[in-house]
Length: 320
Image 1 (cartoon, one colour):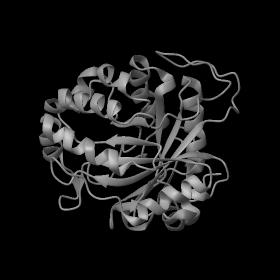
Image 2 (cartoon, rainbow, N blue to C red):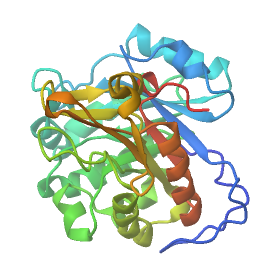
Image 3 (tube, one colour):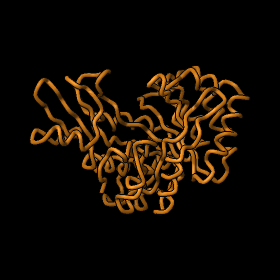
């Protein structure tokens, strides 16, 4: 995400695969996502010095030439981050409250029009005043968006001097998969300071049977191609800090909700690096918490990645 501090200071940086770190205890650069309306200043300021960056989900495309305004809540989160020595990065999304999903159509109209891109970039220059950087979180894109996304990223990079530029990527295992999601990794990388692999949502109610949010083996498999073709020092490993419930009342759960519902039925699954519980009425819960985060930090160190990015700090509970 942002152009964070360096990486694990004692780790070996590589491109194309894992390396053995000099110290298994080397600190990672940790970013926490804060969602406006969900996270508050206490979420930004806890966990000691662990979180180095707060990525605030704060503006969305409001048509092909407009973005939503920066709210007072977002500005408050930015100020809280800065008061406590953390960087603050603004997220640009194409999530639509009306659709309750990411809107590829509005993103496509913006990305494929030079004047529309220019209008959005002008708005983003204003919106990012006071922020340390911007992260592009345009999801559910298609292959028809590849060229436009590359152009938009290059133009943003030129328009935001002195600020970091990052992008979140839906996970895949090959070039074809990324192109189908609108991402030409090699063409995007030169304009980006940070590239965040969203290594979660392997399973979830509505699209799969019960299973881990993102098992360790799946994380390594998805990371394998991403780390092979990109400079590992630019990569943040996205980590879940939430859970899902299947069966009666299927839903997303915060970590505290998952723990409370699971009670004494909670079981740590070391192979998956997550917790699970089978409850009455055919309900099943899987969730990822700070113990899961520790396991994924080890993966990040083994590849010499820049760090980890945690979705989301308002629901995660204490990370340290």
